Image (cartoon, rainbow, N blue to C red; front, side, top):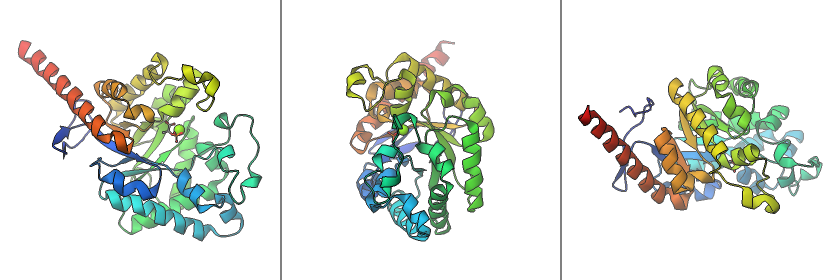
Length: 317
Ligand code: PEP
Ligand code: MG
């Protein structure tokens, strides 16, 4: 059961549609996991952490400062469990905290968040977590605990990486709490900075099982268009050739190395873009709950076209 791009995948029967490219789903709130799993999705391509942290009402750093780390770990375990359980044994890629400074200000303890002129280019994602490793450690401890309880279907995905040293450092922290990246837990990065896309081979050399395109951010950083700025919203497009060129490049390099590729930005719910990605040989696509069925149909149609094209070519030779 090997796909044309060299990666291994299982043929999935779902809602009577067969696809080799996996169709996954994005989950932002643990409470929505059950509904998301009912789509028949092949796993969770993005489990966002921000909402579960916001729902606690207390800034994660405050837990640490006040010596309440255990409480934070417990809350994370409860939340992640809802998703890991709803999808078990299908894989759930947990994305570590990606909190921009402006979004966590309203929380108890958030008054200490620094003011940033441009939070989107600021202290968020993995860069922040490496500066505050206690929070990252709490997340890893929660995953370790679930792992010990048999939820071995959880993988880790790092947001906003731009240099392989960040990947290296995060893995080191994971090992400190007893996780074994790439050995007993799937490990990957989001490709959402042009820096990561252009040097993908260096991340592959450092060691990853998968990458996932965060096209919401990849678009804003490639085109220099703030995704939250209405004045430039008309220029914002994932279909810009520069964005698609970066994606194509990364898929090609990853397929050569046997590293899985996925997408979890909004573009993964857009049929025309999904069509291009399947043609490029992406391993999986993660869509919003309400788009899973449509995306599955698109994937099946494109795969059929590709197979027929290849078969005709062989027959003509
Ligand atoms: C993305 O950037 O495409 C993504 C999926 O992450 P977020 O939207 O949470 O930044
Ligand atoms: Mg992002």
